[in-house]
Amino acid sequence: NLTILYLNNNYLEILSICLFLNLGKLKRVLINLFNLKFIYTNNFITKDIRLNLEHLDLFKNEINYLKSNYFLNLRSIMNLYLASNQISAIEANTFSFLTRIIEI
Image 1 (cartoon, helix red, strand yellow):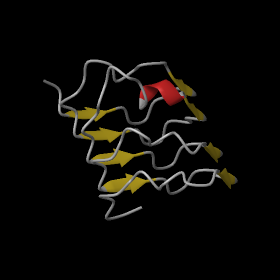
Image 2 (cartoon, one colour):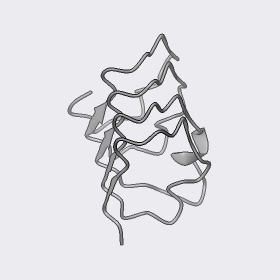
Image 3 (spheres, one colour):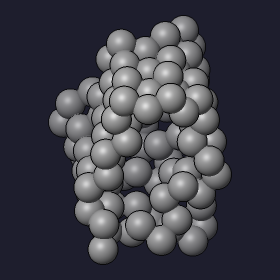
């Protein structure tokens, strides 16, 4: 029944595979000041999970590359925060699945 998940001010470089499995009611995820460098695609994309996230905050990490399928199953996202990362490349169509997006 978790709806908000705060993982702020930690030192994790990688989010493990299927971290959000069985958290279908999750609406807000805040992962700030993390030193996060890599997001496994399976965190947001699996056949068994349909996240209803509305707010995803990845502010101030060390993410340097966004793959086009990172946000594939996050069609309900309205707010996506990626500021203060080290993004040097974004694959084509990375944000094309975010049809409800209000703010990036």
